[in-house]
Length: 79
Image (cartoon, rainbow, N blue to C red; front, side, top):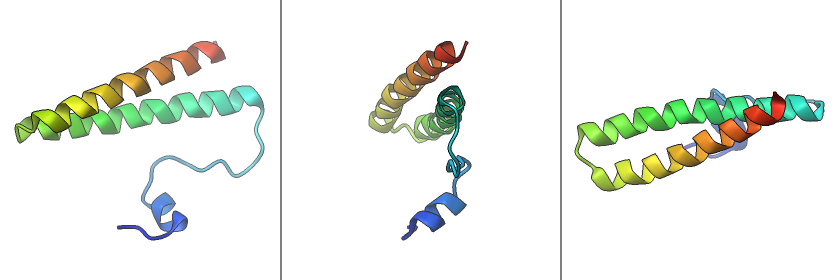
């Protein structure tokens, strides 16, 4: 398991904000990050389904719904 923030970030496909952004740029970045998370969660759901782990699959479906809602709300704010 990673033991530092630098190690965690090096294994992530989400970028850390390194400079001050305008408010709408931050909202757009959060929307994109939630969309990316949705893709990862969907892959995990597929794996849980493949091994018949219904409890994990159900938990992940709940998380997916939350992040889909966040992404939708943030994207609608940017529009």
